[in-house]
Length: 537
Ligand SMILES: NC(=O)c1ccc[n+]([C@@H]2O[C@H](COP(=O)([O-])OP(=O)(O)OC[C@H]3O[C@@H](n4cnc5c(N)ncnc54)[C@H](O)[C@@H]3O)[C@@H](O)[C@H]2O)c1
Image (cartoon, rainbow, N blue to C red; front, side, top):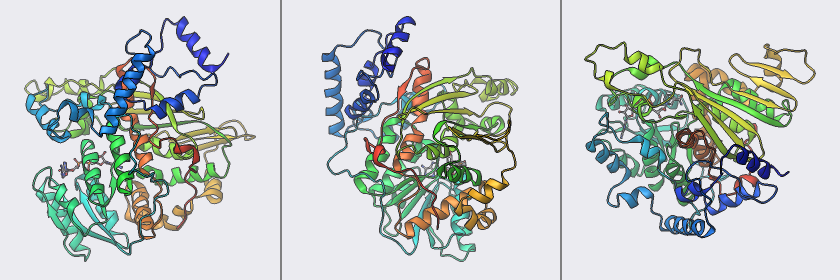
């Protein structure tokens, strides 16, 4: 029996009636994506990608109407948000929502996460940005937005890299801007211009005509407005993780990069870890055979950090207070997606997600003095979220996320194929023919397969620092590619696909772990692209 029919049969037995209504009507599924979903079934039937929502069968007429409406809406370039609030930008909407007053006096992030993306057919002015080469530049002139914890670290790396000029620095906090300016001057460079006049002053930075690249290290919901503004002003954008929080935002990044022909790279530093690059190199040289399964995670005990301060000042808590899903998937997923050649010969197809109950933060909250305002908080995010992705070629990836459990740090970082398996934390390997158990001495593998970037630059990377050197290497490679007019290692399609796990996991969790389709941000081009190779300098 063909797979789709078998699945349908099982659903029938379980009393579940698969329907794709919600997909049409929430506009997550474009006509092309629908085509792709159909194509993936051997019997030509539509994959029952979403099991929740209305349980009645959808008439073809109703489907047709929804699709027409979706297409018209996409062509109009309008977003659902602008339809609902025609005179307000998303940022203004956030402010209004805050003024309206939710439990914490914050915008309703649940609504934002569920905000539907359009069925993006693209416009005639859009051109794919696979292999995009910008004209080489002798110096890369940079503006940084956000010099808190992360932005300060990135600044340190950038100051250690040849060919970088820091032109402008923006942060809400004037003292952070002046501290960053002082660091640049202390390194013997001219003082960058500072911007700290409110939360839209970054627009003035983006308008400058002496900047090539805008670095963004602000809270999650600022990444897209800032990256889009940078690209629309002719700059390349490099944004912190996750690049986007909603499907609509993911498409906004893709569409803007394609319209402006600018790079938009998510700064996924973990793709440059020594172990991750070793595994990539081993994979490309066939050690694991044909890949079947990967595992990724961000398991980081951060209860103290998350509970610090008020929910107004601690933006991370604002998110876990309102969203339940995998809110930080890309550190673990990025490297695994690269091993598997996601967007380069394979793609994410659909996802299911489940969150545990929440106890970690609320147990902490209960130890606070009775008059502490945090005693009134409630936390939406389960202590651990587990999501599963299925790829178009049939591979699976398990991804976990937890900030609230006492456990050692791990990004899991595992990959299995027909010839072998690698697992991290601690790093170990097992290949066909090896005696039973794990090989934990990776030195012979390092000697044979060690990635050239680490061989060439490892010492410098470790000296400059940042998560054991991976931050330096990522920044170094980005600057190198821009200076030489090379395509970047990570595209806007990677940024969108890897980040889309945030809203899709939230959606799946909210719908009883129903499968949800991952939009094809490449609009079908993943089939013709090559996965990243073993890059050298
Ligand atoms: N890749 C990594 O390893 C890594 C590590 C830590 C954080 N991050 C990411 O970096 C980003 C920042 O995290 P952080 O820990 O530095 O947070 P942070 O709160 O320490 O810093 C954020 C900074 O952004 C500024 N900011 C906020 N809104 C702004 C606006 N509208 N205009 C200008 N400045 C604004 C804040 O004033 C603050 O200084 C997040 O996206 C986070 O996920 C990545």
